[in-house]
Image 1 (cartoon, rainbow, N blue to C red):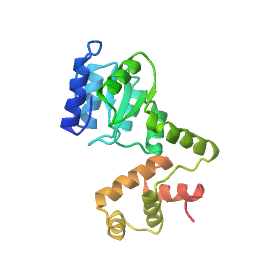
Image 2: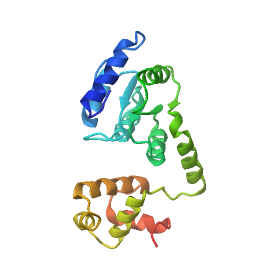
Image 3: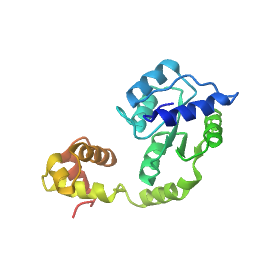
Image 4: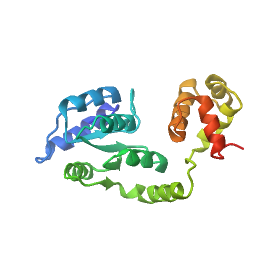
Length: 204
């Protein structure tokens, strides 16, 4: 179980420990520690959040997939945006639940994932279906309005601090949005992001 909110994590851990068929083996407060612990403890199921300090949950999943780890990953997150859910599921997530899910639903999902099943929260079904349809007919990634703003300013040659001042955001927040843009576009730097966005018709 990895989550950067100790009180929430404590509640989930408590729920798991109350279920006789489940065995709790460890917890972590950030993605880097979670990856290390999963490699060492080799649990059947790892519960991650998408957004965590250090390495985010999808990157942890990608690293586990790359290394051929047998651990199945379940996401428990407050982020239910269809593009984020799609990214997690496409990376190989076995389950994706909202943090609003009840203790029983969370534990039932852990048991299902351990049995090899997949679980998606009811409230994200419509969004993920639409995301699949959109991507099926268009190779352009789905960008949020904020990501589109930042992409446009990046294309104009603005630096992260300049974009932050223009949009009243911290430089760190801008860099986080840029990283998400890079991931969606499949690139690793600003110049490549602008070139790829132009190729895909995301920039006027």
